[in-house]
Every structure is written in C-alpha cells, then in structure tokens.
Length: 464
Image (cartoon, rainbow, N blue to C red):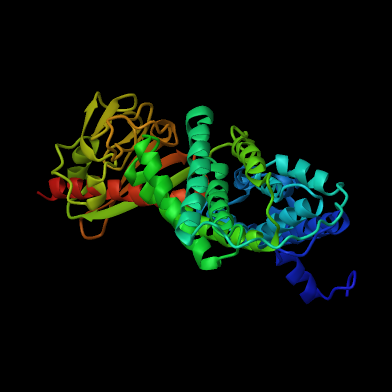
C-alpha cells in the first residue's frame, strides 16, 4: 500500500476522469509511469534486437518526443525493415494505456490547479508537453469552488448535437488548413491529435450543460468526422480517395476522444473560458511537431511472378514494354497513378528509362545493367502519386507532391528449373506521413498493385 492506496486503487485512480490530482501525486505518478514506459520499451527491444542491440541504444531514444525520432535513433540496430515496423507497433500498443493516463491526469491536474481543463491537451504536444508537465507539477491546488447544479438544458438533443458537431468541425478544418497550407506538415498532430481532439470536443459539448450519455458522444463524433471530411472536399483541401484511406484511423481516434470528452463533461462544472482556452491550445498542439528534424526511413516493397519463358526472352520486355491494356483493377480506376508503358533511351549504365503513368512520367537513369539478370535504376523525376477525386480541377494538398517518393527500383530475372523465369520487381520509397505504420499499410498495398500490373503485362508479352 502506497500513500494509502493499494495497487488496484492506484490503477483506478490513474484511469479516473474525476478524482482531483495535486501537484505531488501528479509529479510522482508521471515519473513512475515514465519508468514503466521505458521498462516496457526496453523489453520490446530486447525481444526484437537482443541484449547487444539494447546496449547500443542511445539514452536519448527513451526521451525522444515522437516515434519518428525514436526510429531514427535505432534504425541501424535492426536487421530488417519488418522488425522495425513490428517494434514500433508493439511500442505504440504499450504506450496507449499510458497515454490515456497521462492525458486524463493532466486534465484533472489543470482543474485542480484552477485553470481550464483544456490546457490538459498540451500533453499531446511533442517537446512542449515537457514544459506543460513541469508547470503543472509546480502549480498549487486552487481553493475548492461551490458546485452549482446545472438547470435543465434549454436546447434539445438535436440542437446540442449540431452545436457539438459545428465546434468540432470548425476546429478540425481550421487546424487542417493551418497544418497543410501554412506548415506543410502531415505529422502526428494532424492525423492523431486532431481526430482525438475533434472527438473530445464533440463528446464534451453534446453533454453540456447536462450529461446525456456516452452514446450521444460517440454519435456526435462520427457525425463530426463525416462533416469534417465533407468540408475538406468542399474547401478543396483534400480529395475523396485520400479521405477514404484515412477514415478508419480518424474514426477510431475520434471515438476514443468522444469517450474522453463525455467523461470530462460528466466530471467537471461548466466553465465560461473553456472554448476560449480550447481555441488557444489547439494551434499550439498543431504547430508543436511541425518540421521536427526526422530522417525518413527507406521502405522496400517486392512483388514477383513466374513467367513461362527463359530470362533471355523476358529481358527485352522488362527494359521497355508496349502500351498496357486499360486497367481492370478497381484501385487503378480511383485516380492512383497507373502505369501505361515504358521506353528506354540508350543502353547500359547511364541510359535513361521513362515509365509513363497516368499522372506523368517517371525518369529512371539505369544504375545496374546485367542482361538478362538484373536491371536497376534511380528515380530522379516523378509525377504525383494520384489524381484526386474532387469537384474541383485543383486540390490544394501538398502530400500529392512530396510525401511519397520513389527512390530506386529493380527487376531481377531468376532462371527456374522448368526453363521459366522468376521475375521479381522491387521499389524503394520514402513516406513523409505519420503515423508511418498506418500509412505504410496503404502505400505497400498500392505499390504491390502497381507492380502486379506491370509484371503481368511483361509475363503476357514474354509468353506470347
């Protein structure tokens, strides 16, 4: 028993949204939970890279403010990209309950200190959150205020839901515009913090001044997600395909935020300064991780197909191939860059290969010319990865230009015992989107479908 609480009581206290938190308990709990996080991450690293690998991890890894920075510090310790991805996923799963506790306790600490609970959102802001934690650890508890029971609401459920949705959408669209158009940043603040905050706003407002229940909060957050997506399309900030890709992540995080917001509404008295404080805090969170120095990882995606022809017959169709037939793959009909044909100028290392896509050409100077075994190239120019579905001809989305960039490509032709060829295509690319583990699921899926379209065409040409 510590400080009069059993371990079970401490767990309930940490996850609570109502119990007040004084500065001493806040500081000691924060230090203890940080130690728990570090121990958990060390165990994950031990399982993935062994004791020698853990010994080589720099101390800065454990206090790095984002997963991207942590990945940069230890990327060289992994033997494969897959091991790095799984390590990140396991660390994220371990961090989720600790994140809930940290945010919940920071909200309660703010209320206990007599300031707006929305300053607890500062916990989401990389680097700035350390300063916020230090400030909250020194602020004394405010004198308790008399609790005034709220009068019955003047607004009906529908009106409350619409106001909650309007507030959530207004903040989300404004921050998205700031992040995309001003900062050019597609980091965790945009794709993680913003959906959580959007759901928190919706769940909190629909339950004020009288608590209406968790179901109202969840429904309001989903409606806010739909309206936010619609607003981004109307304002030409995003296209329909990209919104569909991000929808699963946004909806899940918004629902988590809605549950959190409903709990906050139930556990605190109304405050006149709540919305004003929220308007100040959101931009701080939004700009906190913009332009943090990060080295983008180089992802690798390989696809292969068996061709019933010897490598000598396959090689000419790899170097350059005729027009592909219209795409039958549904993905290639959504605006994703779709390969059309390839040609080459010159021969050998230094020759330039041009691979035409629906969005423009890839310019690929040859770096390895080993017929009929290996053809490798760099990518020095490339078109946008997709043409967005939108009511407008132009969509102001910087991610169409520089967030997913192909760096290298390679074809390998491996002779098989049956006289055929194992044709293997590989693309190396960078991805400047967060969270990387989520977006890589989509990028690998897209690259693999592009590979398959080209490989099947080469197979058909070679076997004919």
